[in-house]
Picture 1 (tube, rainbow, N blue to C red):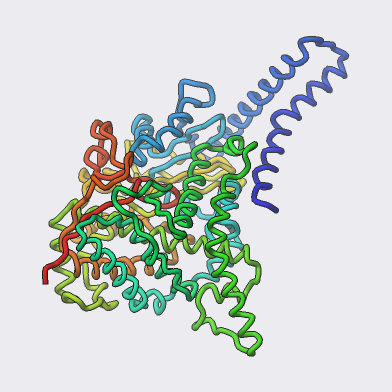
Picture 2 (picture 1 turned 60 degrees about the vertical axis):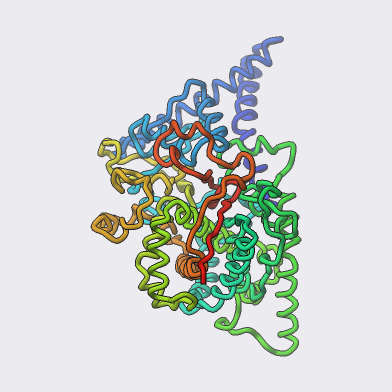
Length: 591
């Protein structure tokens, strides 16, 4: 089935349910009673369709209230907008993505309604949002069997991620996870020689820019580093994006998630990022997002054409390698195979292979790149942290030795800096699930805003978005300094609060779908930061190099929390990023 079919079939069914059935019902009633409406026929049918829809909604609400009472719960508090269907809230939500600080619109709603879990009820469709640690724990872990990725996500992401691990449920997902798990074993994720080669090359490129007195767009640089390392780790071939054209200050435009260059990799990266932005836009548009694309077709197609052109040589090379080995009577054993070779041994369908590659690329490129970008931002904003972290690195690794697994394990401040960055800017700031076709009960809240103690009724087949970024900054969990970057909270007595409640920190998700590549990401980031701080000792933001429209607007200063003093524009589209990239001047260590 073509990806379009998923939502087109759903739209057809909705049209039949919402329009055709009531129209046919009224038509049958009029024929039976032999009533003739004449010129009133069309208005009568319109009024009857509206009445039918209203009656269905009221009946569904009554059923939910009845089930909630039976299960000893109360309905999730609803946002009450000024316009029917919360249309005003819906329009504000669409606008917020382009104008407000990440998560601030939702945070205001949570504070206004004195709760950490809300039903936005957009266009008469339930849409649950939460920043509650207990409710997130239920969705991801303790109540895992009540949720899945769901039909809605499959519709939004099918053209982009297809049948990959992030877009499937149940047995299909289990099969994908079992396929990927061997490639993230300890032996593989501690292959520091691989990380070191690409880290050294990346840092050398950054040094060259430093010598020219130019700032570096580090987000783009880290995306290239992580992609080149991941391509060899997973596919057995370096796609060599570090050899491409790099962003130049004053001559680089914004892409969907950062900066754009005009080379072949730049085209791929821009399409890869624009596809993610489109997925998020569909989420924000809600249940009726297909209406926006009904007559224009799936806008993913133009992005996928560029992505497929870039991936096709990798897939064809792998297929050819398999054919050559079969002719020689050979086969790659698992412990010597790379991920793509293992895929080829299990399928020869290029589409299946493409889906798997894109899913793994999304995880291995974007998440680690996001982490390194925000760490660099904090190094530039907190020189005292830079000095202390560099001192720890030199103590364990000297000025030029690569770290070992034990070195990284023993660098406690390094891990504290990484954890604090992941707390304030988790790679996936917001994620979502859908309840299965049966109701469930969200347990008692984490206590924020003095919510009532009753559990909440979770309706069936309803999306729920959980804001990890807001939970990570919740002062009820992290204290009054929750918005402050302070790595020492991971080293002093404050750590005990997290140890007693580990679900308050979930940068790599939790439960059965916890990220299997988290150790890969942490080891890769730690090695890179070691090499970076062995070479550079100062980091300074270069706002003059940021593309127009990428700096925080002045209105943020009248907000609250980090938005009042943030020096970059954080955003999220599947994964977190910095709008317009992050331009930084590097101070090279004098030798």
